[in-house]
Length: 210
Length: 210
DNA sequence: TTTTATCAGTAACCTATGTTACAGAAAAAA
DNA sequence: TTTTTTCTGTAACATAGGTTACTGATAAAA
Image (tube, rainbow over all chains, first blue to last red; front, side, top):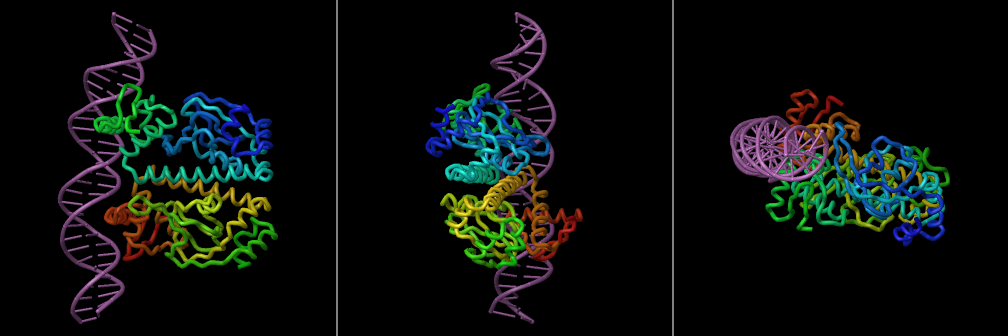
């Protein structure tokens, strides 16, 4: 673990804290597509993402999803933070977008460190700030963009976190993430292809205009 | 100030902290409709709301608004928190929905107290949690509700924070808050009136089905 | 290989929401 | 009072996005 930890968080935390994280944190690997956290769950430990990417989703009253944003290495889930500290249930769902590695910190420790390490306190507050910003960006996307723009942004974001301009995804999966229907997605994708912004294949899409 | 402070925050903070707040905090009154914070502004002090209500807005690229939520007494603005701590610019606009009273805390103090008072730390983290929840609710409203439902929810929320079932507002103002057009609002309001959920007057609306 | 399931393309239609235009009522200003 | 401005109602139309239905292509299973 030490290497992953140093690489991603070394510049943030002092050695003493890194040692502590190393001691009490447990290493966890999540394969692509697997659920990390679901809505309504209580959370007993806080994840620090060291590699991979996580998709954060909100659910409507019918159980249909809506993507909020992706997390990447160096991020933590502020929702989880919130839940840990407040003893509340998770309000979001988190799914591994790619194979991911996490360090899990027990709730008790993360609270203790808040008083003990300035750098940890700063990290937590920073995480909240980043998550608020991401949520605001999600709101902008949902409220201000038209669906074709949202779709293209989604494809670009997805290509970004996957570090690849060809993304493996079906139209149905996109429709679920964007909280719309498959037919609509197919229609708009076709238009994007005609405009030369993407290239369509079965089960995958190449994003050209990155 | 002491009374307002005790009443709203007495159960949260220990006496010593209340004394400190009383010493360094400055009292501020904002009349209805006045701007508290605007997008892009740097923030030098953190507001604790002791009476009244604040409307929090997001802006699109044309300068048009979208309401996110209302703050009420006992709340603070987590966006402001974020900005203070991170030295970042405000990402939202805050306007007094009703005449409001605030206690302003200098940034330096709020940082100092984070290390010094457990109750302050808890308050700050709690505020973040609440704001994340409100933003998620805003997302639900925008993404999952149809406009007539959103409109009715808006009217109910507004009646709530104004402590009055008759709200003073024009259709144009509603349209701005909901990021839609006046004609659409008039149309949907008329339908709500026919359904017996509201009663329309010039410059005001009575919310019946609260 | 044959059969079945999944995926993508497209047409035809429906509905919610946005837009333009105009008119009358009420309020404010002159 | 007369004039002007603001506010609301409504019609007529435009467009984005959602729905249903069907197709052929590809891949997976038998």
